Amino acid sequence: TIEFTGALHTTIVKQVRLKNPSNKTLIYNAILVGRDADDFSLPKGNIVTIAPKREMSINVEFTSRFLRPAEAVLLLISKTVGGIHGATLTFSLKSEVKHIRPADILKCKSPCYEL
Image 1: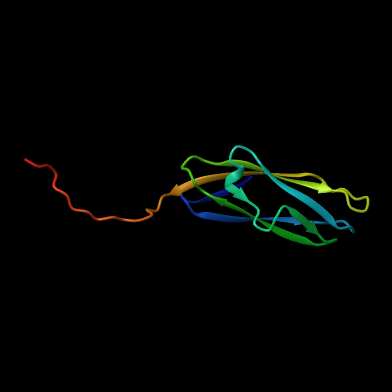
Image 2 (image 1 turned 180 degrees about the vertical axis):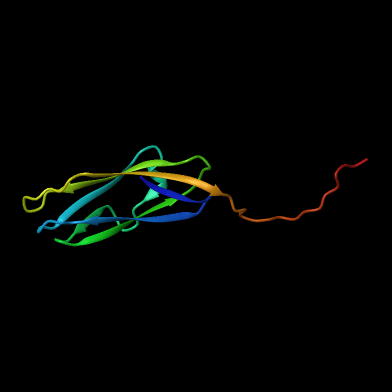
């Protein structure tokens, strides 16, 4: 589970580190699914390529729009390349709004009542 914690209406970025222990290149198609999948994004696109014997990180962004917790699932589905097929990877994405910052403060004067 990857947890995104922050203020309302802010963007939080988390990284997922992936390793390729094989001698062949792995290519994954990344998909966000679930009730709140639209609040999560992959800024560098949906195709992830990992060179042989290397590791890389992919960024997952979340922008909170509501006070309720958001949930989605990140699926990394391997494409077959040169006869090698990687395992499908699944990550649970959850959010929690810890505080609210005011967007603006307005000062106004008005009588409480009129006779």
